[in-house]
Image 1 (cartoon, each protein chain N blue to C red):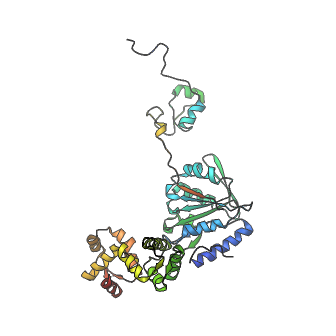
Image 2 (cartoon, each protein chain N blue to C red; image 1 turned 180 degrees about the vertical axis):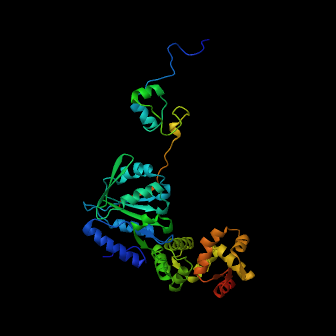
Image 3 (cartoon, helix red, strand yellow; image 1 turned 135 degrees about the vertical axis):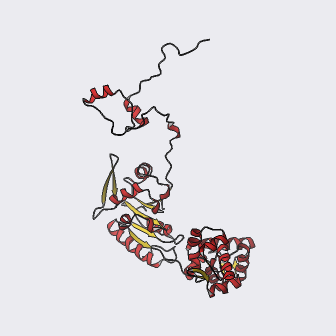
Length: 77
Length: 307
């Protein structure tokens, strides 16, 4: 009986930054390597708001429902 | 021109709205109206009738959108679900019903949007996007029973239309209009109107009860005797009193005077509910008086004797 992960399996997958933004929004916090960010921005980067990083909790997108506004549209003859 | 041929009463409202309609037909603009008054006085009906008299640039009647403000939670939801699909670039009249329940961020947005000075257009920027309001294309009406809960600067931007309670003559007319297939005895309609609590919605409901009664008896002639029978069957009291109000009167007659807490303990309703829903009406009809404590009046005692 085979056990464990198949050969070549990786828990990581590639997704474009643009597509990820569509799912989680452009303002969602993500965790990156501090050294990499310092090098990228050429300064000691300090996060303005300590926030929960993405991945610290599972977000079920199907469960997020925006309540509907009740309205009635009348077209007069 | 009579813009409101199907609506009874509210003559001051009709006069004011007719003036704005005449002005609209020349300028394509209307002030931002606030329909204010107690429940059942016809705020929504008049807003709808006003909208029905507005025409688009192509001569077609303008569509009418009724929003229940208590279901609007924030700006994002409003702009995504309502403004972009239904309002933007459209010729339409929008009624914000129960507008005292508008969320605070949309109220703040409206302070900017409806602060138009002499312009017929207003651009509102929010969350990096621009929303154009064109007041020649879009007519905005607000309605509420609770004007004291509207943010005062927003209220200042609106033109208030005050609705008054209907008198018995107008209520009789509404009953006859809504039960137009019924042949009423003259003394009967006045008696029916005396049991309606001053608003048009109650008159419409009473007309429906009468239609049902006549339908069940297969007789389209409605007499005072029929009304007494209907009163007995569905429990209609004089002045349109509720059975809780009857209990309050009977209790006050027995004890002479009582505190609000005492009445609350006896009747089993909260003090707020008693004050808001019942006491004001009994005071209005001069059936009780408040002099530190609650007391029944002479009119109240006389009514108690016949209840």
